Image (tube, rainbow, N blue to C red):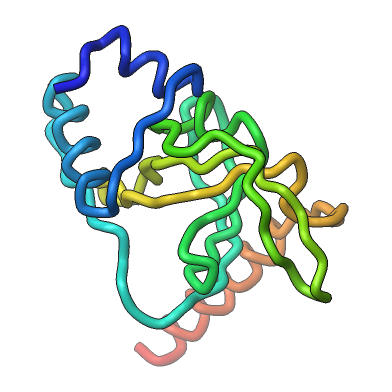
Amino acid sequence: MIKSLDRDKLQTGKQSIMLSDDELVEFFTEDMRLKKINTTVHPIPKGDPVYMLCIFQGKCGPVQALIDSGANCWLANDDIPQKELESSLLTPGPIPLGVAGGMQVNASAEWGSMLPLSDGTFQCVRGLTLERVTGPMQKLNLGPLFEQINMIIRLTIEFKT
């Protein structure tokens, strides 16, 4: 069992621990039990690669993440695991990565983290942090478009009934 002082060091990245995928799930399951949080920690998924950009609620605010199972991990900006998620530093960096175009960049660290799911459970993930995950991206307010889509769906349902 990991002492609470050591757990705090793992969360802040002052200490690291090597864990397999299965050990990582066990670690976070025990961590939640000790915090008296009754939840399910899902194992790291196996299967075909996916590439997905998502937004979820972190501890302090919304978090944008790039999930790339083809790279066997998720990618996030530096400080996201420590500040926004239940996490544990697995491997301090720099960690060399091959990227598109044959270029190489360095990840700052490898983290084990739990992504919160909408049903109240958590998805265990292995991830790398980088100073920048993507190039600059324009921010779009899709709220009005979402509302228009919902209205079309409501009108379609009303028309069919």
